[in-house]
Length: 408
Ligand code: HAM
Figure 1 (tube, helix red, strand yellow):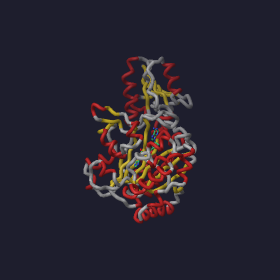
Figure 2: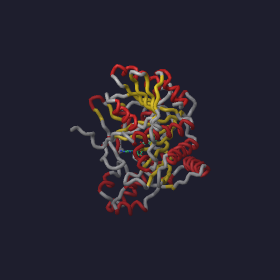
Figure 3: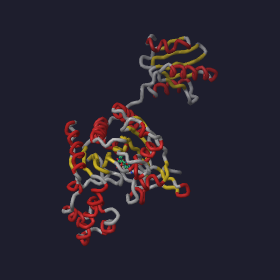
Figure 4: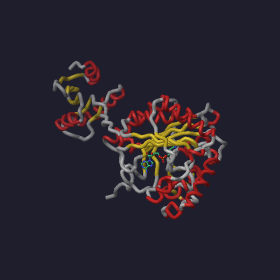
């Protein structure tokens, strides 16, 4: 038997209901704040991610699903594609910032485990074209609201600032000097990455490396006056909104495009994959992919992880008003039409599709939780109230009238 690929999921039953409810909640919260929906293609030029996400990241180095002959890659994330669309559609001509949200699936060739999949879903937003710290604070607030609305448990918000690329470059050199001076105590992996990605040393579990990192210089202490001011403004607005956060100067995110604000929500209801959602500012990304200097800010949250972290009850589908059956095959077309008419009039209605006996149809209507069963036969329509068992013959075109008036 052919089975689904490891690290992918079928979404069905209660999960499908939960996904739909999460989409509705996201739409309500984000559109109320002026974010408009965007959907970009499932694959893009490989170059977009190589340049946008960054050549030294794990994502680009080992996690992308790339079809080399065509130069295309299944999207591992949504920010670079949204920035590409912003440029391609001349959105700089619109009032800034342009605020967009998405709910899409993404692809990363990671080792599958609970909460980590090779195809996964994200709700995300991007606000492009303003470096106002209010954009940062509002974006963070919206994710906090979404996580609260889905009842995500055990949340923590970690916050930091990475400054500008210039500050980062200077700091990076300082950190590299520090790591080299302590090279003997570092893990081999960290040692090998001193040139490529020294910041990742803060992520290491290796005890020797961790000890070295405790004394390492922190980027947060090296921010320029402007960047510090920006960060203070973001914090001030979060304070005003009553959002609790922890400053974590070692917060590193797995993507290269971040500048200034970075943040991440984790949930202790999740296992090892505790990151529910995160993001930050990316003031250099649009330039990196060939556009003019344009600031941006956004986040994405994993749908599977939000649902794992939440205790949202399964939402029930709407109750079935009418089940339409037929006593003889010659009434099948009429039954079909009656169900279609009822739906067109805004009711939930189903027609018998399994060729069951009259008894079997009554049983099926009961199993489906139908409030009424309309059985088409030689005598016209026999309409039964499934709760009381009451039954009477009615004219075919008065069925909905009887149901609406509840006059059986
Ligand atoms: P990210 O941190 O790579 O950021 O992913 C955001 C969220 O997607 C994570 O917190 C996690 O919940 C979920 N996620 C990531 N990888 C997986 C996986 N393999 N399986 C299940 N869930 C996963 C970004 O993608 C950035 N584009 C966020 C952003 C938007 N930054 C600025 N704008």
